[in-house]
Image (tube, rainbow, N blue to C red):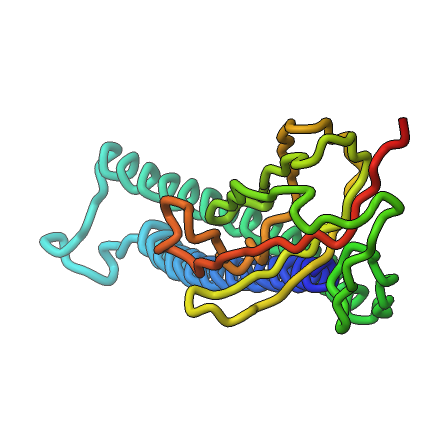
Length: 259
């Protein structure tokens, strides 16, 4: 169970980093397209400004070339209007240049972040896989057999009930009640997991050090079974939204306190 959880967390971390790199790459492409369009508009505006400047600075025909009825004379107001138009084009050109400069700066920043993400992904890909040490509480291929205490083993010495595990909750819980007249200081239990058709999905063995007084019940918390994969106990109100399962308990051993 713990191995699957660690592998799944590593896979989710790699997936998130890959998705982040892909998103940043898409943003870079969008910025490049925007920069290209802005550059085209800047070039078009520059051509218009050049043609306008040429038309304003074109020398007026003199009387030696044209007759008096075709002579064009600009008034001071017309000269002022042409100069204002030229200044407007120049300001628009400068503004577009500033936009292009800002886009280039943002593209360089995003490119640097993409390179960092690629390096991190490469480092994760080259990271050696370390096999986790066996956990005493994890399930194994061969289930443990119930063991007897010096006082004699009673399968009903502890009563397990009230198992709860809600959808997408990483924590589950159940209650355990001491059904003897002795104080119990620790116990070991095996939990079986079944689908709704009764087929066993998995099991795990857990050991707890807990003082259990006679007749008293206590709440025990543990990791929710495959909660990342939307597994949920069938008693939960939203069990229909995930993969419902059932559980059963088998008491393997316990230790009674000596008087």
